[in-house]
Image 1 (cartoon, one colour):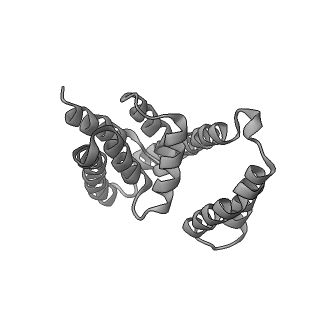
Image 2 (spheres, helix red, strand yellow):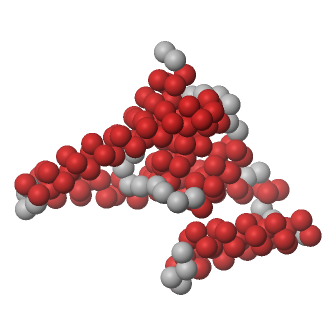
Length: 180
């Protein structure tokens, strides 16, 4: 199997089975990236940050970055295609079936199972991201705690876009952290 086909199929699988949005898909994307054995955990964490800051769905952005890291521009195209096509197919099918079976108890049952699973997937992404930021314990610096707490509070208590919080954190980090 060619590298391009493998990239496409790995991200197509993620696209078909990665419910719950970008953060919920992060564990699957990380496992997919590990299949190519050329990305460190730190590089993956940087990829998540950049994927959050760039326009577009996080999963598609992450697929593009992994594909580029693995096989350049062509790899980025194949990974992005693999990630995006399943969403198009599934959304088209969902619109059809949700319109047709809107009042169905079966549809309610499906979503009753998907909602809590999505929360669990997002929780695992939080643990994965937190583990890579705060472990080993020597990485737990006052600056890291302040940045994490400030971002958490700003997201909960204000209507500031997470994009602006991420950009501000990067700028402040570049200006302040080297001085500490």
